[in-house]
Length: 161
Image 1 (spheres, rainbow, N blue to C red):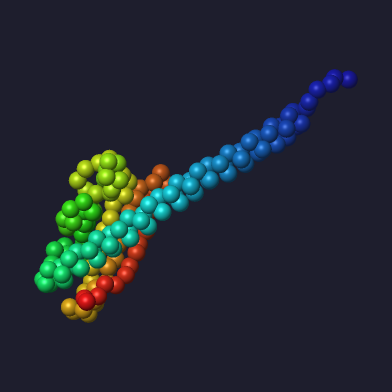
Image 2: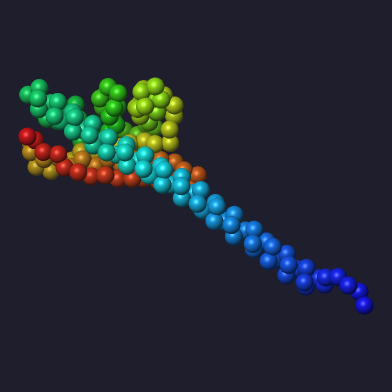
């Protein structure tokens, strides 16, 4: 009588071994993906809030200067939306797609002028809901991941005071 494993026993042993290795690897891969998405979603939420605050700053500055509260925000009223640079409050038309934000580590600031390229872009769209009294601000952040393009949207209203 020969001792050893049959082909069937070897196949079953290999199947059990492969299953015990693939399960944790799949879980680790899913965890890494979830961590990346969560980190980028948090950054996107901050960038969206910053975009809303940039519009608020321009609105307030215009009112304090006693000029039309939408001065300088004309591109944002366009259907393609706009981008506002946090560094100098310059406003530009997005056109087909908004330009990617840069991160300046010396200023710890996302902007369009200086810094390292990022995967994030910001589109700001303003709709005047009550002429001269209220505007709706929609800020959408887009970013590219290994798993496709993601987005985060924030909406709010600003009033003429």
